[in-house]
Image (cartoon, rainbow, N blue to C red; front, top):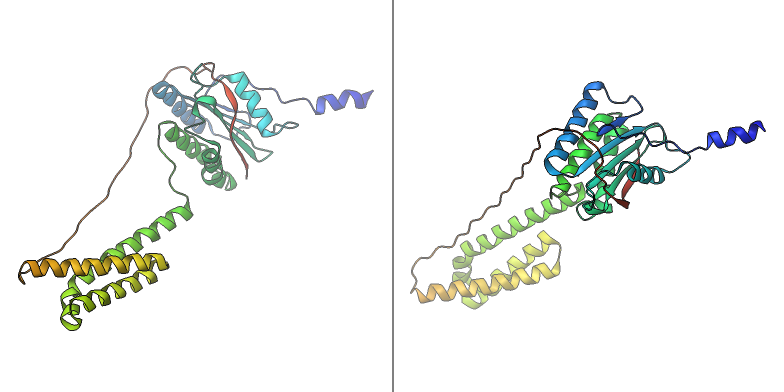
Length: 282
């Protein structure tokens, strides 16, 4: 009889705490100041944007998985506006070393599962691994708020490296074309117009192949160099040997900024959830 009485107690589901604040810490992980700061930020965002976000830290979700427990929290708290379903809940099971971002129906376009997974893996868990739970939650919720407001996550490290290399290659190709334009007259003086154009295009194509590591890029650059050389020769002939110049310029820039302010109470607005989001471990 004793065994029969103990087993149900051991395997009872963890109760969902009542929603009283934007941040609920049942583990004592966050200091009073950290708790108040994060709670105030999430309340202000809800006041400004309408979309709601809540954070829950608890020791464990056992015997349930983090996914099973998080959806129960979502159904109980109803974060987000009714009909708009624009709520997000971050659940952290500290002793289990698991976390879950639960995304409401209305935000599954702004925060698809793959993007939520990146927030977990690239922003939150690296800080959790060092024991800095406050930084992980602050950085993670900040990223989620930006996504809700329409901003995209920065490229992953590998993507940034690829884009950086591509920009460098394009810049090098630009200088190759500029060099061809400068040397065009010398090459033609030595080889003649047609042979000079072929020679210039060949050199440019070879260098483009080396820079990009692509035969196709080499062929395209060589062809473009050949045609450009012929065009410059025709233009020069049309001017009767007069001087000409060739130049180019460009730039890029951009920025983004954002903020939030305001205050007020915090309670679920009737938002619905369907299991969208992502989980992770640290």
